[in-house]
Length: 423
Image (cartoon, rainbow, N blue to C red):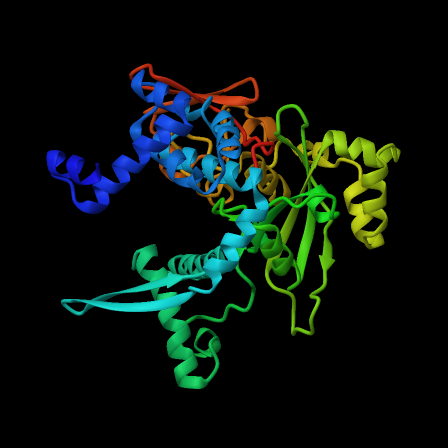
């Protein structure tokens, strides 16, 4: 059949195989998605994403994934839909995700390829936490260089961060000496974002931390999922732990603990890895823990260290963030809360980048009397912040979200991240 379709549509073997495979999956396992495609509600590309990612599941699990992602598929961007599908797949079958990860780890490699004209590619196949760590470090180094006056693009500087490491190691036997002695001005502080040290941030549900369930975790900036075993291995290197308290009904962040607890490495190390764990706790769980009415949660808490137990049971402090409504620029803790609450940029057609790397914008500007409080702040990208500043788009608060209006009258409403969706 693939050969027949390929010949008729002038497709290569790979494209024909993919088209036929997707068609069979939709016809036999995802009839609701197929109907949405035929009605023009969902694109073929989004349907293909579902068929391919759910191909590793049995029929029952695949139907569960479809029921979770199809209702909102039409309103998501392709990247948002792909992220939702990936999260749903690992959520319904985390054990299989662990097994697939272990098989894939055997293929970790670094490949160089020269393409001519003095250019080449460096391709890395690695675990998601390694990937995000490398990216986070290279991006922070590039932005520091840019702020110091380097005229190259951020992409060029990110690549140069890796070259700088190699040059320093080959020249001095120390991967960081060139940063201290060769090219950079004296900068000894760790990189920061909105005033806080830059860390690889991971999300994990409370019950999995307590050992009561075995769900996957997620890397906050990229949305990549980590199987349960990978989460435990990540935390074995040490981490800073904070609590995310979310609304049980809406999934919106209500409180980000002001305090933190240091989880020491399980093995002897010079220092813990730059990892911050955000433990997702619902208001329902928090109330049950506080009252002691849930025996399983109470038993799990008793196994934790006293400081970590106190952190999870601590009262809410988010209201304190609104105590300086005239402050400008936005204080560090408040900016951090807004970024974590929004998770992704709040402008229309936003991708899956982290809101914490974007701007902190006042919905009602300070010049117009706007206050520096949680409900008047959101996280657009720099591009959309400028579009708003230039008057091409405007934004107002609508319920718990933000309604954007273009100069042509088009309106789009965005909302804070729903932490019930994943990881």
